[in-house]
Image 1: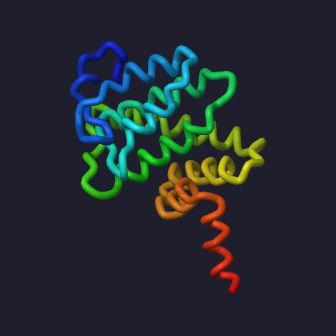
Image 2 (image 1 turned 135 degrees about the vertical axis):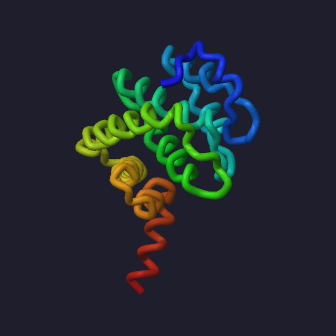
Length: 162
């Protein structure tokens, strides 16, 4: 996992394909501040993600694991990063990040399995199931569940029922 003091953070690109030091917002999040809007905006932009997005994932999971309650943004943002990592012209996962990224996903599935037991809101259930599907290599199913609004999913199934 890339240490917050590592100067490499300043060189990593985010979703806008320009350098974005995600360590600043991640520190804020760890301190209990709400940095989710910034992280969403900077780590993912119209399907684009970058090395900063990948490097942030282990920290997002670590921070969420230590929090008394997991913010709903965790599962959605990390799933989005994973989905977009495999699409388009996004950069590959750097070698220096692979072990920490894989470990974070192993921890994330445990958090999702724990939280699914109590989830009742449709989007929460979908996000959690999407993460579980992605963690098990089911990218299409994971994408459908993680990125589709509940109303859109209902419309999709209504067409199949006709």
